[in-house]
Length: 171
Image (cartoon, rainbow, N blue to C red; front, side, top):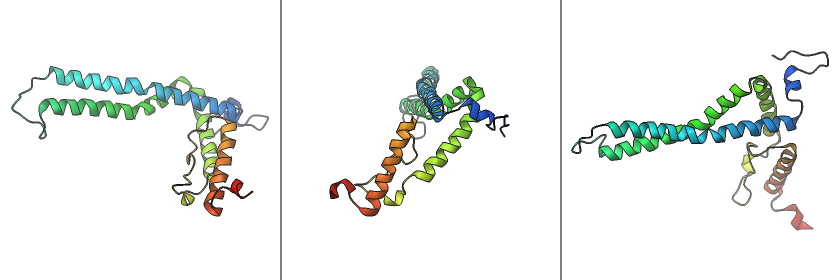
């Protein structure tokens, strides 16, 4: 729990005073996640490839029904793919290690932000080929202005789904 100061604000609110500051930290966290893709993909591939390169392979044997070289290639690519999937997790851990004082405040703001998104997004039941749901989870929102634009798109999606068509065309 956050302790309150004499002004009535919690410590977390003083660390991240505005939504713009929150979105700036959020984009910084995303940069950490993107940068971590490359090493988390390449290092397992090199390690797995080096392991299979040093093995003595019997050309007349099979491994799980595959040629040993084919199995080594599939395992190397699989290790790279698993590393690629771990990239954002490692990037998030790196961000949290480098910005320890903001972790609790970011978690609190994340919860508040996703509650805003959940409360204001258009119903997915109104989805159709001509009227897809715009950014259902709010992942592309990186500023207050983009959040306002997202709200307008959600309202437009709702209007199209309930009333059909674009309301601007009726004029």
